[in-house]
Length: 199
Image (cartoon, rainbow, N blue to C red):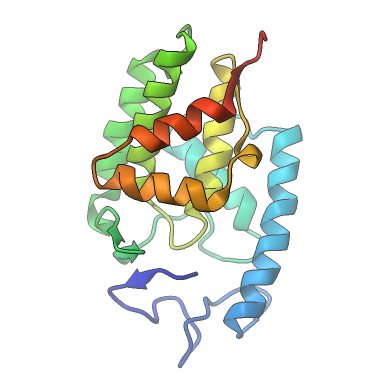
């Protein structure tokens, strides 16, 4: 919950940086801990029973809603404030829908990355990872939603994408580098965690 916001108190309890939540937890560290446990449980459910959809923006938002609906009224809803994190600025809130439309239409036009060899698949996934990371459409929970969606997209294309096999700090560094135009590290990280289901 370390985003920098145009309005630092957006959706937060008065005088805090703690997001308003259904459990009425008003301590940021406690909320972060509870959120981590609940979201992990929901993600494990999705690993066994993926949320069905068309790999479009509605599908992406539905995954976020499923993961976070026990905590936030706005789960599955696009953010209304501009955010940045660790020096990386994300898409302006008023541009999210138009950028998402282009992003997910491109995914559809590329047949959801099916029938590609591993090198080509990693290239496409790296590009899509960067675009969805820049999109960052939600107030909180973007990375978790992204990883669930990408894992399901990979399976649909005949690959496994095992984010549990990568160090989270290394992935964050690779993501920051990619957001600054250098995606070599990100491609290397993704290559190591992507395997063909046929293997």
